[in-house]
Image (cartoon, rainbow, N blue to C red; front, side, top):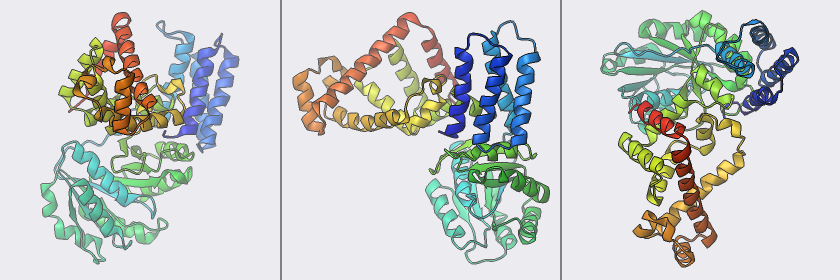
Length: 447
């Protein structure tokens, strides 16, 4: 999970609120200390930590509680709202409002500039934009080849002149060609530090490109040093936003996130893994919900939309709600889940699931089981897939031999199916919330 330690600390704070008998000043003081500890351990600046917790305490003690909220609910809301405000409030979405829309990436060596040029290309391509990539990094020898390979992997056009030392000349050479794209991503050169030479080079190409967005790429592992780097780049190169890379799991990520939030250069994207699609638009509300265990429904719906078609989603939704699904449906659901990414990452997006404290190794074991169950299903007859209730000991033994699995593993799959069906029938009979959630997911996914 993104920022594991910070999430664990803050979810512990919410558990303390939930389990408290009374909400009084003593409890609030304890919560403030817990929040301070969690943030400081994630390398957040001491001054910022005390500013945040002072605001939480003042609101928790002094503000009138809305009539529709209990004291506990209000206290949780204060913690959530202040963390969202702390990380940038509503966020800073990039609005693609012209063609071509130029996005220039700047940063120091090792920040992940070129990699994230490829990730941005993938991000916007998935959303229907025609994207072009151009390499103007004339310093790092492998930059040209790396971006070229990334463009081929993503399936977008690439421009560059291998061996050319003048980045302005490279851009001018292809300036007319680039006008046919919706979005053009420009990868620039870096240095070990922001020196006069780099500033001059960036300003030269900036004056020619006239980029609509100048994004600074920063690695999360630099921690609090991100504040100085973001501010310096902001003041000298007029950056409009920040991409924080390597955020998955790093303790120092908290320092980078909060540092950028106070520099006037808002975080616009976060890199959360090594894969080409491991990039997210930074939305403070969803991000805070995720680390607090409340989930991020918007991000979940987007992943669902990428993994399963609208027609299939509606069909599966109806079957699951009626309790009429079979092993073929369960197999399709499993395939969709795998497309959405590792279970550990999908679970943190589901509202309420983060608070269940499901061990990470249990989720990883479940992923291994999914792969095995796929082989078991491929060894079943159509009749068995459509009506798993008929799978007795002799059928399980035959399926076991055909799939190379133990008969116990086959029985476990059938048991999982029966439990899922029983659970859905229980929801159908006793709770309308499941139907409401399914409808919300089907209606909310954008295809």
